[in-house]
Length: 286
Image (cartoon, rainbow, N blue to C red):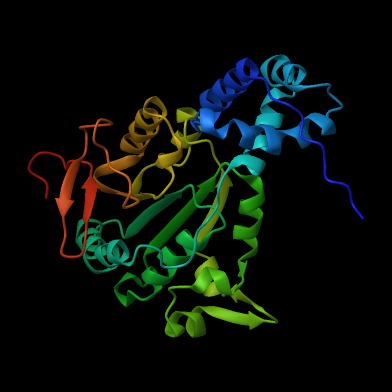
């Protein structure tokens, strides 16, 4: 019988130091009630590095040359990755029936469309977007690029593989399952016809230099990600989104999220099915 791994005590003062390093690195904020969560999930990291306690671990992630590598590893054990296909249906209807149609007119000259799924987790969101785009025959011959990014390397491996179990399809209509997936044993693999539009990368949303390499985007999805950040980090992320979006581009947040007390740079646009944020178009451009 396997013994339970020992949980190494995390003193309150060290908890605050470790918490602040994580927040500064990626924006994730852990309040005082989360102390046991960090204690439980990071104890194994301490043992992996043959350190004595959390004070040693704090010094390791603060001063060691391998600190950034370790912070990246921490993300794999601390981040929550609950998602599924066709999540938040009303917003997706606003996207597929109204926003896309608007962008089709705005981009008809260059015939390109670039969409970013920020905090894409295991890939259900960007693949959902790709399926909705596939349904729009009017975009045949267009250069469509959907980019998924996350700070968790483990979930990105799942996203690139594109194989999912039934729990990912809790709101998926049989039509989409039959058309865009191939059943394999008890799982479903996304077809190459969808996969070809999507690429994935490791990305820290607080890093303006690396996000700049993505180039300009027509739409940014960042749903149910900002709820884990403190306000200062939210502002930094939203500023990065604003810089990445083209004039008139759209920012789609989760229904539990808003830009109140975060940013006044975006306008809230009302569609038939939902309300979303828009980077103001250039004056005189609709």
